[in-house]
Image (tube, rainbow, N blue to C red; front, side):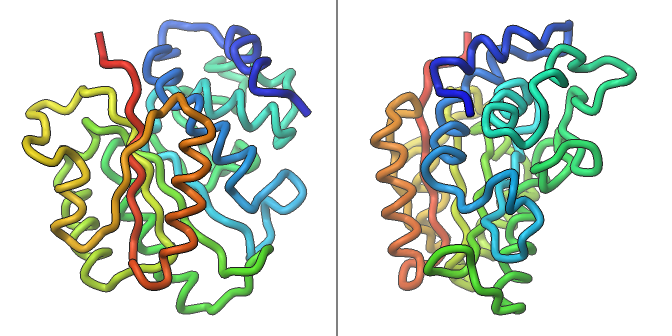
Length: 235
C-alpha cells in the first residue's frame, strides 16, 4: 500500500497530450483524504452493497484519481504506464466498465451531481446497511467551473428540497468558473437551496478529513452537505 508522498511518482508514469496535469493535481489531496480516511470502500469491498460510493464528476484529467486507486490497490500499478493508449483500461476519462473501483463513466461535465442525487435516493429506498455504523453515503467531486452547467443547478435545488441525508459534494475551487460566484461564493449557491456548507483548504489533509467527518455526522438532521476545497487559482 503506497503513501501520499509516493503519489507524484505514480502520476509521472502517466504521460500524453491529454493528461490535463493542472486539472488532475487540483484534486489530488481531496482524493487522497477521501480514500485514505473517509470512504468506507476498499479494493476488497468495491462490490459490497454497503460500501460508500464516490463519483468523480470532474472527469477531465483523471491522473490523480488513477494514482490514488493504484496506491490503494484497486488495480495494478503497471496499468499506469499505458495511460491513454489503445490497449489501456485507463482512458482519458474513467470508464466504470474497465477500471475497478470506478462508479461512473465521467468526463462530460455536469453529470456527476445529478447521478449522485439519484444514487443517494436509491440507496435510501433500499435501506441498505453500511460497512460501518451508518448507511452508505454518496460523495461527488465537482469542479467550480463545472457548476456552471444547468443540470447541476437543478440537482442542487432538488437535493436540498428533499433533504437527502446521505449526499456529500466536494467542490474543488480553483477560481475557474466563467462568471464567478459573487457574495458568499459557491457556499451561498448551495445554502439558498437548503444545503449545509463549509470551506477549507484543499491542501490541508487534517482540515479536509475533519470537514468530511462533521458533514457525515450532521447529515441526518442537516440534509445534503457541501465541502468547498480551495486550491491555487487556475493560471
